[in-house]
Image 1 (tube, rainbow, N blue to C red):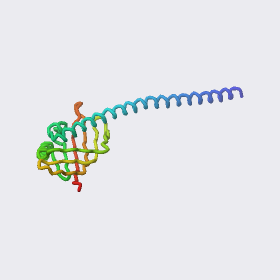
Image 2 (cartoon, rainbow, N blue to C red):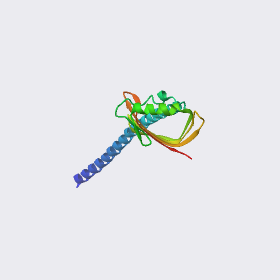
Image 3 (tube, one colour):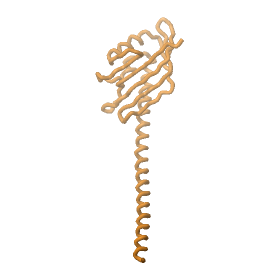
Image 4 (tube, rainbow, N blue to C red):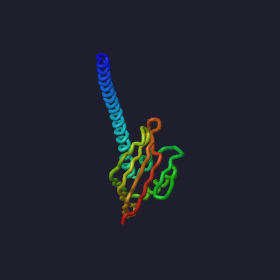
Amino acid sequence: MRDAGKAGWVRRKGNAMGKSLKVAAIIFLVLTGAGSVRAMDEEESEVTGTIDVMMQTMIAFAEKADVDQTFTDLSPDKKAVFFINDKVYDRKSLLEAFRETFGKLRSQKIQLKAPKVFLLGPDAAVWVAHGKGITQDKEGVSRTEALTETWVWKRDQGKWKVIHYHESAVPVA
């Protein structure tokens, strides 16, 4: 009977040690996992900040009607595709379209609400926003349009480039 009692004590002690090991393993996983969550949050914050700054710069150049500076970050990739309303563009034709449009403008103001960056991975992000564009042509005619925009960014060899752009613009009465 005494041996059975010792065996029971060993089992209980083993269970206590097993529980302690399980708790230690869980704590280890939580702590190391929290580190990678923090690292992911820092990376996401860095990418989000980078894309936000690039978009603010792009919008500032668009308001000055500077096509080359506005679209300096368009990807040269032949697979990149861009849309404005129902029209499809490659890089070259998009730049030509904006040169024509910007060339007719005296001024332009872009007021976007709730811009948001969605991180798709360490090298891909989507920027979306909606708002309005207010333009005045060289004849002094003003026009306001409701805008929705989506920009898909891809990091290639350390540089962020736009691989897709979609803008919907609807005149506001």
